[in-house]
Length: 379
Image (cartoon, rainbow, N blue to C red; front, side, top):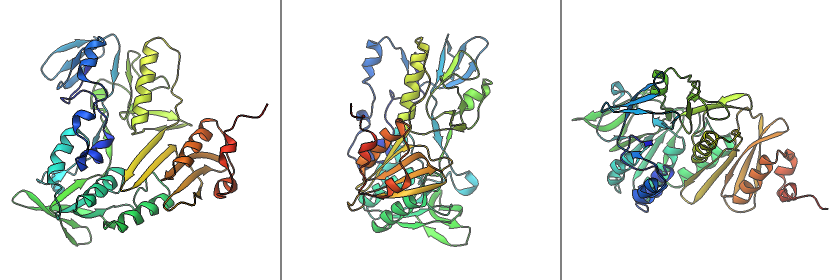
């Protein structure tokens, strides 16, 4: 049985901030499977159903309507939710949006009209992707980031600088180290942001892109161990032996550090892992994480985790706006950010999966053919 709070069958979320907002892709094309596929595979579905309680002692879940659903094994794939501004900061004003679901996209897309002033709070991937879409649609865009630089939590200065320059070249007013005191409204509708500096920025629309938080309330109320997500083992099991979890709602240990990943690849790989474990396979989660983002004509591809890196190396491909940033912990290669550089991403992914560590000097030299590192040895 597959139970979901939204009225839709499972769907891909990344296009919500890209082609869907641009009007190039409609929600029915986001579905991972046609709705009838589930019945054909013997899967009972209950959408528009919110679970309010897990009774672990009885192996039951209770819906908001009071329905009791029994389980022998339970898998939590509750995802993550967008962080919002509190009411005291104007988060409840009309014209203030977040973007996480189809419903969010359907509220935001009609109001992205040419000439309107869009203020974006947060310089992460969601904020930057929406900024790119809004500029293409003809809106005036101002993006505010409270940290010293955009993408500070997930990327090195080289990658941050690349996207800072890209957005400014496309007309985005991008301001870092800028804190919002509150959003101000007239007759219940947002009209401006008041900064801690006392400055006021007028706005017709505000997108809050200040990160997400794992949906762990259900797990916590059931007494499951949570640590920046539902804590799971390498096999996806929670602290209850009959309950598993997968996706954005989970945290797990990788290289001695507990991490929580928000990516399609991680959600799919963890879901596949849990299904195989429940089917009796002895397997563990070892997939190398990868991520991607599209902004204007630039495609960012990331492989690996850069946590704990000590330095980076910039590799240029020779093509305009094509480069990659390689993250090292001393002499160990951890991760790669590739901007319009699919070759470096593909090679780097294989290099990391093979456990190889090219020297920084090799990576920095565009004349060095890194493909030699992944070729099988000659017999």
